[in-house]
Length: 569
Image (cartoon, rainbow, N blue to C red; front, side, top):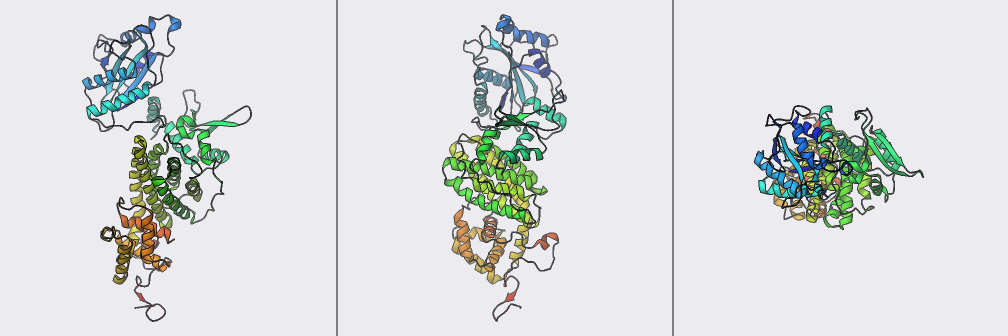
């Protein structure tokens, strides 16, 4: 249940006209009162003799009783209270109880003999009500509505439990400002998936990822197509910025600008500068056919190291790594191929809430992750196939583990909203991984099924020696042939399977993995520096027989080395 308190207004009648009207798109159905300050307010929705003017005059009476100079300029208090999608519809009687509790909790009408304001609760949809009040009490005083938003949220958490509704995680004041109802209606009219505020927040976050200076940041904003205004002090120092979408205009046809701090607390210019204050700027990595794949490999390595920090590092250092992981996710979403782009974008959108808490980041320790994000951006868009596609799966695999570690870290700290956001991001990453990994794992699986029995037995023995407690599970998984093929390739590259497995298994926990064998595939291929996509011809066309440049073991190819040079059996 979400109470959303709007800034005070000055026209009671105008607000009532909207609430009792048809809505912007005829979405208001059967507008009527469910509760009021005295239970006897006229209801223009159900009583044919009642009028909006009569209800407005009743609510405004304490305001009008004051001398004109003593009346507050903004005297209309307004909040909506909305249930979560999937919650059962509440009855009018239940909504009435909700309204009474919200106005009492916020100080609008505290009850128990204390002076209160006049108010009315209007319902015009199944899932929410609006409460309108005038900010002068019956005795002419002002209500004690200080921090009414936090008080309303706290009461909503209690109501959810009592009514058996979806329980929203309590906030801590670090969330980005939610779009107003007017912004949401405007987005609906314009056919936007998200409001202008949300689109700008997403674009600015992607722009920040891997940036290392003011100049680079503002150049990227312009390249992203945003309108930018800088706030400059008389001394010439840059103090801040605001951005607008070119096609988002007000009624006068002027662009609607949002300061960075109004998009999210960590997008103000001073907070953005904290990200690169400890950086040692490096030039963009060279572009080329392998640039996206190489950037993804390096990102996976940086993410792997970061998991340990989040698990066991100091809080401020862990917080810095979680924030920088958000930059990698933003950069990966920006450069991903079409078939993974949606899920990665949704993961980044969810995880941005997990990057902010009251634990301030210790900057400088996150430089490897920020450099990885920079390389992803400058590496350019990745193809959805071949080495690009396979290394994308490799990076998503490690990112999933880091995001999951962040969820557990936030949960230990009592950061409920951040933990929930990280879990949502992890679910999107799980889907993105399945899409990205399907083809390269299928190729490896086919190779593993064709390995010689003696080679399979040797790799199984290596698994039992390196990880005896998990060996039975690994060998029974559908992904075992893919791991066996990977270990065979590692041997050709000069590694010992048991030693390599012990190394990669000892670096991270594996018991929570959905498929341990598949996780080990990407870790082994990365640590042994093996190609991630071995047989592109199998992806391009099933049954292709031409030779590949990828390493193959002698036994896998059905060859013998018993008497000198390789020859076919």
